[in-house]
Amino acid sequence: MKRIKVKKFVMTVYGIAKVLGETRTGSEITEFFRVAGYANIQHDGGTKWRFVYAALQDLNESESGPSHVASIIEKLADPKQYLGNMEQHTRVVEQLSAALFFEGLALNADCEVVHACHIG
Image 1 (cartoon, rainbow, N blue to C red):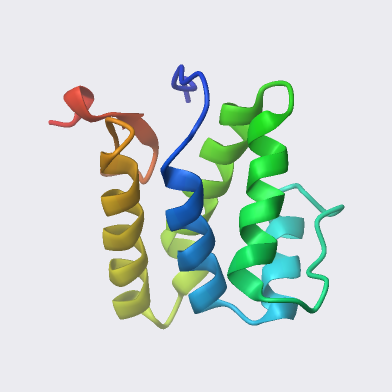
Image 2: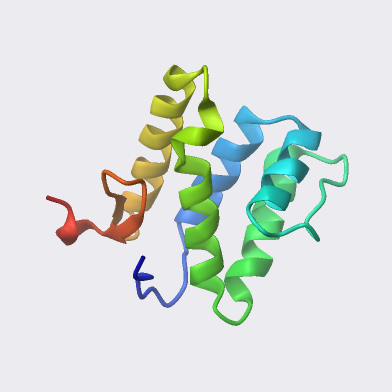
C-alpha cells in the first residue's frame, strides 16, 4: 500500500483518541497497540482517551509520525478487529471518517487512509 503524504495529523488525533478510548478497555488499548506494532505503548490506568491522545501525539511528532498515525487509523478501521460485532465496526469507521474529513482525508473501501479526492 502506498502511504499518503501528510505533514502531520492535527484534528484527527483527538477523534482517534476518543474512538479508541470509548470502544476499548485499558487492557484492550494496550493489546490494540501491541497488535498494531507498538508494544511499548501500554495503558497507564489513567483516562483512556487522554492516554491514547498523548500516545498518538508522541507518535505524530516522531520521525515518520504521520505514517505511524495512519497505520493506527487503518488498524482501528480493520474489520478483522470487530469479528462478531460489525455494528461496532460501522460506528468506528463513521467516527474515523468524520475525524479524517477535517484533514482532507478519508478511508477508502479497503479501510486505507487516502486523500479525500482519491475516493471513488
